[in-house]
Image (cartoon, rainbow, N blue to C red; front, side, top):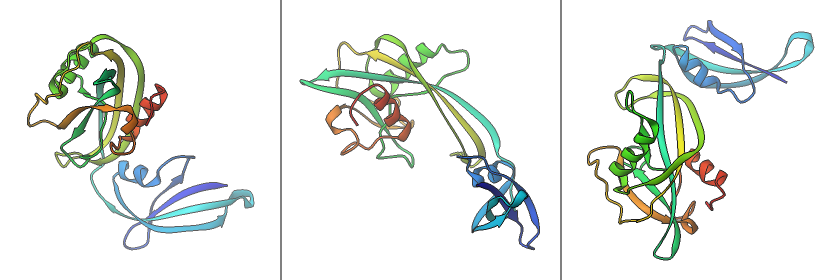
Length: 213
């Protein structure tokens, strides 16, 4: 069965319509194209060749097209035994994601080597010194939404994740006061996903590394 998005303005005129691929978010597609969508509902129609087609209906108002922005960032996956328990180094955040934990890391500065960025970000966010930093995986996320600046963005996050050692785990300290990091901690693996909720992409990385959570 095929799907199609149909967007109408306040007068009822169709302002945008297109096919919707499997897994595609039609609201995000409309937002990136410069429309503010509001869900109206869906209906089933007979499409070409009498093949049924689901029509996803939205009311739309014009807005500025989403500003394309790609952010390249580096993160560290660090596991060590702390006080006799296997732990992972995590951080929580000061913005709307507060209460959800993730891997320490952040944006790579212009011209900065990604490995240098991992060392810098982990020190700023947790106070830990790393060794044996090596590539682990790459993840990405793509969405449209308001940035903290208020700009509407077509945002693409590319995350380089590195495995690393911390031979001398210390009590975490957030050095980057006033930044996006609220708290840092060595979290026992047994607590992941229960008392320590994780960001979805971080949960996937930990699961791929065969860690609990």
